Image 1: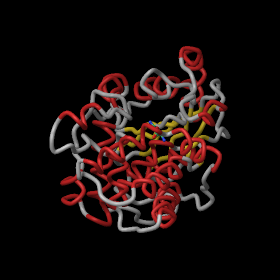
Image 2: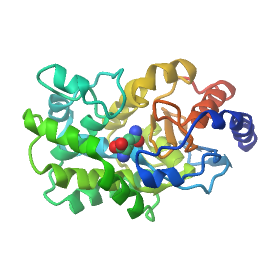
Image 3: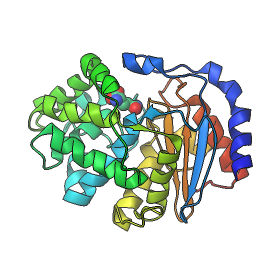
Image 4: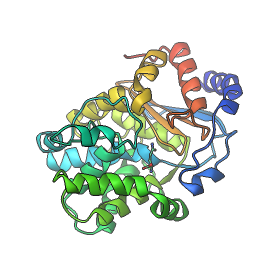
Length: 305
Ligand code: GLN
């Protein structure tokens, strides 16, 4: 297995020069565009990895899977999906356009920024610190890594530059789609996006979803089977934003990306597969990660879509 991963990583490195690291969050511009790594964690807990496995990245949008899972678990799917849709979007992840165009001004899905911010606002916590702790704890449980922590420099860098997410939050509140203190919700959003992980953490996260919500390393049940299924389904249709269709054709797996350069894939009953590669394509998805997953989907027969 290690050799298969190694072959996928090494043969994909040449594509990295076609991508570039995210710069709209200034602190992310410091990431190494040449890093590339892959890991697989089976539903039996067996782990294999290859490439630059010690590269740590912030999870960014991958955290939306944890916060949505937590919200579904605490509040139920009827309530969540009465406020946010489950349809894929052909627009960039931080687009405001479609939100304004059509009443009832519901975000298309929970994987784009507007949807994730709205879902967070529904969680029953008053303080942003409590909300963040609940999401961080969910990430720790999904990865079986109690040491996961927040990269404060990245969180502050996003907080100080995120006019776009602020616009989404205030717009949602102006049309009555979201209630409460927008800054309070955004504060926990920026910090959950700045949770630092490695490719192995991400592979365990995917394996937890592949095992019907039970973490194969700790044996703990994190989500119900139904919640794990919903998360995988939405990763399959919306996990790479406006690149989800292309990813489905090329790779064929439920997966979630983040602008830190991570991708988490999940193959029900089999395991989690993850990549780290901060060089991104024009849609904000890891260009090397997609190439590695395309390779592995073929060589390991991982395709489920
Ligand atoms: N924190 C990032 C943002 O809100 C997450 C986006 C992403 O990973 N695609 O812009």
